[in-house]
Image 1 (cartoon, rainbow, N blue to C red):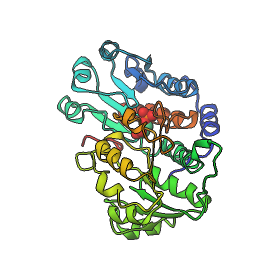
Image 2 (image 1 turned 135 degrees about the vertical axis):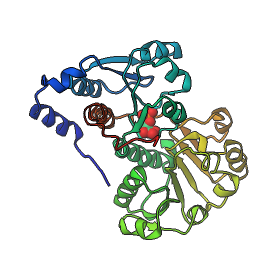
Image 3 (image 1 turned 180 degrees about the vertical axis):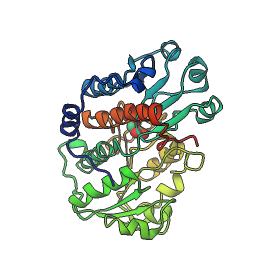
Length: 338
Ligand code: 3PG
């Protein structure tokens, strides 16, 4: 598990150690490379400064497109970009078609469902993510949202505590493991299921007890936290039947993707089961319908999980370094369109 505690301190130390102007022959070859950072939801300034340091240290030029509201701005900005760094920004076939020089796109974050991998592969563009770099930030938000939920959204009424409650983690990757680590500190009993891990692998982490399947997690746990990616298999998989297995007073927490929820099914269930709560960091399409469940539903107005300076620095700088490494050595370690 990768948990970076004081990232900015590490980053500043690193900058002090490494000279910012290096002009080797090798770097000169790439001096015309343009790295575009296109973020509808911008990184913290300190992270952009760090990305710029890495980009310029390697002799490339940084271009920045932030808070764009029209996809045509993105089309124009990618036109002469050799490399692209994005967050949840959609890199569609149209974007790729406008990016005639593009060689690499890095999703600064974990989930890469926003990248059209087929379109990238068809053009020979390498697509990467930066796994683990923002996972602590997301995990902290999960726990913060949980406290908010069990304390009745701070409405003054008596709530309950997390200590002793059973927490089920669906998908035990970087975020799930960080949630487990923090939940242990709260004194919770932590269980996990991951379709790609054996029970032994989960148990060996020492942070969670494996359960046999997804259904068992919902049946046994007071709270279920979702950490599955949005794929053809997982889309709408969190549905009426599955969430309906939760015990009385169950809480579903979603910091993954809205697409994994069968929103109509969950709405129907919450109308029938007035004990259930749904807390999400990704506003559902049916937000207006969920709002009917006052005191049992909360959605952040904008996805906030990875929105910390530390996570922005981690993911943004990792993206810039992966690009530089790819151009210099051909390293494709984090490629996702193999
Ligand atoms: C991720 O997949 O890394 C998270 O969902 C964060 O997404 P964001 O960078 O758009 O906030």
